Image (cartoon, rainbow, N blue to C red; front, side):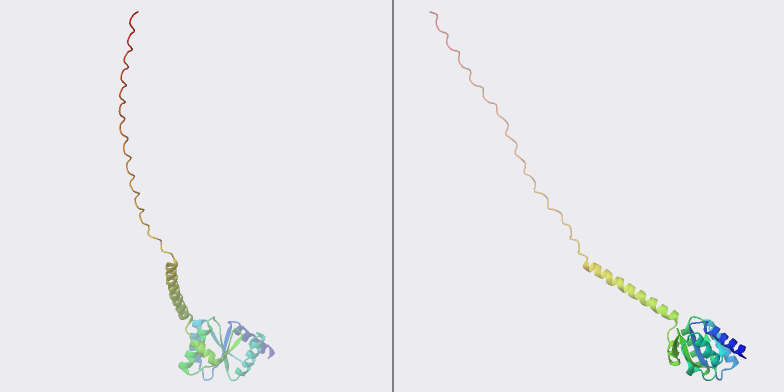
Length: 201
């Protein structure tokens, strides 16, 4: 009996280690066909549905250091674990409950923090990761375009306008230097008359 109990605890521990979240559910009135359908839906998120004993879950959760959820360990319990998209799993569980009016969520643990059933319902109502990514990309694109426009306008506003170059006025024409008058010939001096010769004595 002790070996069987240890085996069940170890099995639950293995389930809890499959993801950083666990969702506890009450599967009262859930049929075998319902479980098969639920597992098929959960498989899209690589999540799993396992019926567990409350006593084994209590011990396994404590061994793994999970927060205490003793108040949720009443009535039949099944855990949902696995995959990396806890929000996507919460959506599946909420939709399944709306369709079947079965499988009540008790409580959840995400990143070692307790999450109430009401909070899980709010998480389920959030847009999907793909939708959020598209919205963010659209927002970034719009903001980037607006930023470029504002930056461009600011640069144009602050940039000094280059003065228009005007042609330099033409230098006034230098007046022509008048030509020097032509040199006139100096008249020749008159010949000096020869002195008279003295008469012979």
